Length: 581
Image (cartoon, rainbow, N blue to C red):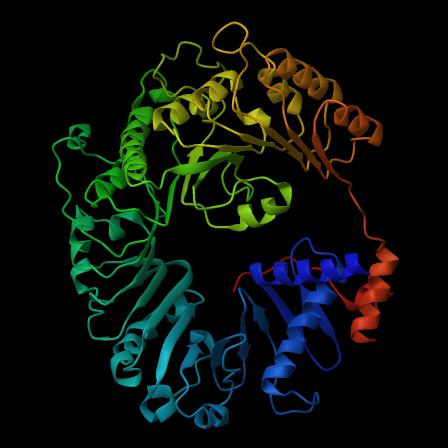
C-alpha cells in the first residue's frame, strides 16, 4: 500500500504539471488527456473534483452551477459558468465563479479568466468587485473575434484600474493594436503570446517586473528595439520568443566585447529566456551589464544550414558569437564565486525539435546529481543556465567530411567537447549524460572536464561511454576523470556488465578506484553482478525495479473514492486527443 500511496502522490504531481481538461455532465463523465491510462485519469479527476467540492461547495448535481470544463494546470483551476470565466489559484482564497460570489468576496483580489467567444460581462455595468481585479487572462480563440479586441482593450483602464497582471494569448497569429500600457500604473506582469504586435518598448510601464513576448521576430525586435528596454529597470524576468526566427542581417564586427560598454542596467534581472537567432540574441546580451542571474535559457534549435551553404561556416560563425558571450559570462561567474558546478547533456525530451541537444548547468549552491535519491529533486530544480542547440542539419547524401576544424559540420555533437572546453568550467564537479549516442569522441569530452567527481549515465548504449572511460589518459599510466569517485547508472534498459567490470579493473590499475557505484532502475542488472561489484567497490547501492500490480491499483482507487467510476468498464472513460484551449 505504501507503493500505491507514492503512486498517488506522483499522480498529483503529474496533474499539477500537465494541462488536462475534463468534461463532466450529469449522465456521462468523460476524461480527456494524452497517453494516460484510465486508472490515472480517474485518480486525477477525483483529485480535481475533491478540490472543487472543497472550495466552492458543490453538494449535488442539481446545483445552479453548470461545470462544463475544468482546467487543471500548475495548481490552477478554471471554471466556466454561464456568466463568465473566473480564475483563482488553488489553496489561496477559493473560487470566484458567479456574480453573487464576486460581490461576497469583499476586499479579496479577483483573478479573472475571460473567454472572448462567450463574453457575457457588460463592462459598462461593472460591479465594485470587478474594479478590484488584479489579474486578467484573455485567450483569443481565433481571428473572428479580433474586431472586438481593440474595443475591449480600450475599456481596460476604466473597468480594471487595479490590474497588476495581463495575459493575452491566441491560437494563431493575430494583429493586436495595443499602443500604450503605461495607463496601468500598477502593472507588474505582462504576457503577450502569439500576436503580431506593432509595439514600441517605450510604451511599456517601468513598473514591469515580468515580461513575456512570443510572436513574429519582425514585430518583436524591430530594428535595434532591444536597446529601448533600458528603461525597464525593475524587470526581474524577461522571456522573449521569436517564432519566425530569421537570420540576422548585420555585420559580425559588431560583436567586439573588449571595447563595448553595456547600456542596459537591469540590476533586478534574475531570469532570462531568449529563443532567437544567435546573432540577434548576442546583440541584445552584450547590451546587458553582467550580473549573476538566477536562470538563463537560450534556444537556438532552429539553427540549420541549407545545402547551398554547405561549403561555408556561416551558421557556426553565428553560434560562435553567442558562445563567446557565454564564455565571458561564465568567467564573470567564476570571479564572483558562483561558478557552475553541474552539467547535464540531454536530447530534447519533448520532441519539439528533431535531435536537439540541451546543455543544462547548475551553480555550486545546488546539490550534486548524486546520491541518486536527490536526482529527482535536482533535475526538477530550475537550472542556472540552459542552451538548446540543433544537433543535425537536414539529411544529405554526404557526411560533409571536408569540414574544417572550426566548421559547424553536419552534426553538432562533433563539437560538443569543443564547446565544453571553450566554456572553461573549472569548477565543474558533476556530469550527467542522458544519451551516449549524442556524443562523438567522448574521450575528448572527459578531457575537457578533468575535475568531475560524480558521473551520472542514462541510456541504452552505455558501452560507448564506459569504454571511453577505460581509455588511456592524457599521460601514460593515468586515466580519464582522475577525480571521479562516484558512478551512477540509472534508468537504463541495458547495462553491459563486462564494461563495468573492465572499468573497475582499469581504475584499480591506475590507482584511481571508484568509491561509490549506484545502479538505479536498471531491469537487466542481476543480484550476482551486484555481489561481484561489492567485492571491489566499498559502497554499492542497487535499487530494484518494482512494478505496481494493476488489480492492486484498482482496488486502492475504489477504496479511496468509492464507486465514483466503474473501473471494470472501459467505456466510462474515453481517451481522446487533448485539445489545446
